[in-house]
Image (cartoon, rainbow, N blue to C red):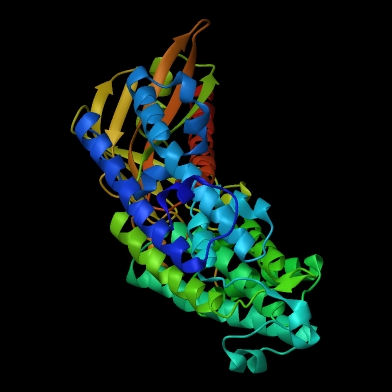
Length: 463
């Protein structure tokens, strides 16, 4: 292969050269990026920097000048590598007889790694007219005997085999590596949906609707098995469904496209072990390269018909709250019960008692009656899991959602009223961080509202 062929989008390329060029190209690209980011811009650079959060990418024009220049430089350096990667993948798709619009998977965060692995192992297409009964040439004939030809049998095997696979993968990620990240929440459901449909359509193409059901059932059954073997509780499984089910369907759709077609069929035998082995490898890689979790901020404000002096007394320590009516708290999420203050001024210690334990909050700023700011030195579990067993305690209940600190800001308003704003700074070690932040921000907002409304009722009520 000549160097000039790297820039062409026409023709085809075999899987061997495609894989070799891909690995060498990525190593070169990452080395250049680290060199430029570290030496020129004095910034750290890791693997996860390639997946820029969508909100940050949208706010590109409003970024500070130095950050915008850095981001623009890195994008400019990426353009020739993107051109080569897209061109080679288009040629590989043609070689495998797949539609070229699948190039969209090239740009899907984290999923693109699995897609590129598949492109590196799928063989060239074989014409159905050259095979008896339209069956492609199989590298492993025994696999064709193991997978039933009947639609129901192949669907059942696809769903069951991939669901059983999900349990040891979850154990490896959460119990061995202590990771709740991209490999577990993104790659695993995608691969379960993909492989289940590839098994389902191994002998012959199946309808897209049935492929969708097979992919969804594989993810749902895997979650049910995690509940059955006491690895997870109901609450966390419900939280992951909005992310896992679309990814499983996404993988099932790719499996349908790979197996579907009237002119040719593809031998997918090599894809099964490649994808299955890729998952723990990606989890190990993620464990080694995972960045520090970001710190998030949640603010909630309320107006109170009482002066700041009266509100301050209820902020420093508040009486016991009534039983929660919010359905999230009734499901087992931790909720505040009361707060007590030990001492006064900077160095005092506030204890905010939750349903699962106490937050210990040393006071850092005591500006009566304007600002009370504190750090957090002890965090209780964020929830009590629902489970059919006596108890279940997955690792994510310990130090995966951590409050760093908080504050109450009181602002005087006309008419003897007060604006009370509660702020919490926290971090969580669960990825994709943007998805899990949707849940954690909403939960913390509800905790704020529960406390702020109680303070409001106390400050506005009789002395």
